[in-house]
Image (tube, rainbow, N blue to C red; front, side, top):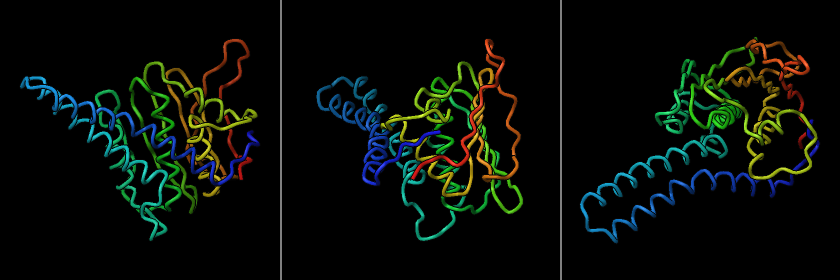
Length: 243
């Protein structure tokens, strides 16, 4: 379990760095496309440049809309967020030929921080499948409380090094722009009175968030066994020691 803590300014700075990292690639591609338009007179090259600009602009817009809801104060005038809006930004983020999204949620209003947590689990799951795959999202309930599950499946699916290190509960001395997002997800979980559990299996990563101290509205699948120890590869992230 991590005992590291961040000052508010450091948290804001690292989250800003993470968002800039996500957006700078398509924005840079737009700039490159504009440079080609200025320098080229060949019709075919100009067509390629326009296609690059269009796709990159769509990607940049989708990433900004996702970050606005996952990290920002979108809908701050109310305490609830429409899960349909969450689905739209996730579909925009995953709009490529490599990733298939299965959004198994009925449209409803949910507490803002619960929706933000759900989006952050989607982001961790996406990082576990950089080459594409299937990401399935479920939202359930345990009494009056909500619970959620996000599962990534596909070839060579695994948690990123930063997420795996952070979510394992091992002591962490510093947090950087690579690990700030799972750290932020744990902050959200604590704010929602929930705990995050992670399980890995053959070509699968399953993330669940359930009420802290309660049962499991979603059964975490049997984790893979370590060939040397026979122990399941799971992490229980209840009550993270974060400020």
